[in-house]
Image: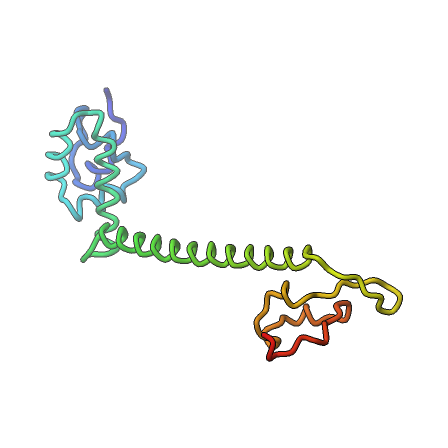
Length: 170
């Protein structure tokens, strides 16, 4: 095999790239920054020894792992890729908490909707108000325990409130 252009590793190391160069398949001449980061963190001789000890089918994955770890160590010299892992774990925990809150809110809303539907579907009496029939809500089907907690939309003009209801009866 004739190498027309030296690999990025040989270019940075300023040496002749031979046919058997162990670094050439993983550090092409078009991506010199990959090898520069790996060389800066691990050193060229350590990377060469490491790749030579691995079977050929594992070298590509090992190289991409070395590049990732080297870039992470350059970004965060203290924690490296471990800092990224901790950050992602914290993000997952926060998102799980948000999801639990959202599920609780959905459950609460579903319960409220079920209560409202039950309230609407319960036995009602029909009363004529201004020439139309409207339901009269009875105290035994009323979901609220305090008249002050009645939502504004319940206090509309199309519902006739039983005059026997007082705040003391709740």
